Image (cartoon, rainbow, N blue to C red; front, side, top):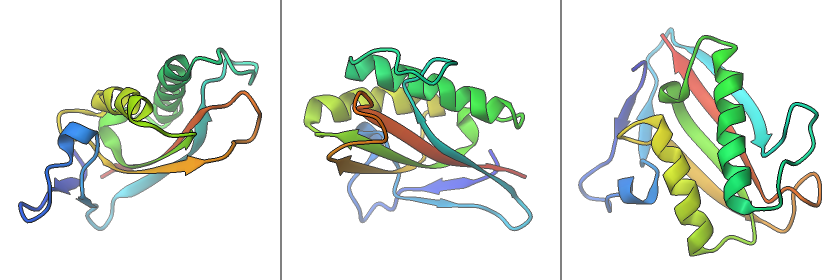
Length: 132
């Protein structure tokens, strides 16, 4: 892993919630920024109005984008997730998807929004990945 994740014991354990508190990237590490990925097919159209299906596809798309750089989800250091009308059920779906990044999840900020770029998009994820 090209980065270090630290969850200070003086803070609550964030891992069950699908994120970590801090990440450090060593000098000389190549950074890869991935723009917001949503539940789209190759034509850019939203594949489903179902929230869980959109999260699933968005993370698949994130994996494809990372693979174009020879990386995978284990290289992700930070996620920003955008959720239309967030609630605990949606947060649970996101937490399950983030588990693909490994046993210790990356840092993550969940941002509740009124809407995204197109009316049917309910979820979007952007990422910062690191490679030594």
